[in-house]
Image (cartoon, rainbow, N blue to C red; front, side):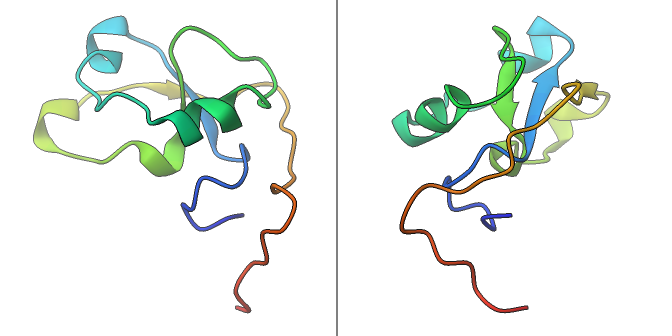
Length: 81
């Protein structure tokens, strides 16, 4: 929805294994701010757009929350498709 610009929480995912969660880069403040708006937040929640695929994450399991809040932060204007 926001093309990875940390302006929404539409891509909220839940990392199912704490060991994989700990292999991810720490979330920046902007990601944490967006996660605060996410439905069904957990201790291992991340924005999917910030989870960078790399070999050490082979086998990671992600769950989608039961619902989403699909909105962008005021002032964000998406690019035309």
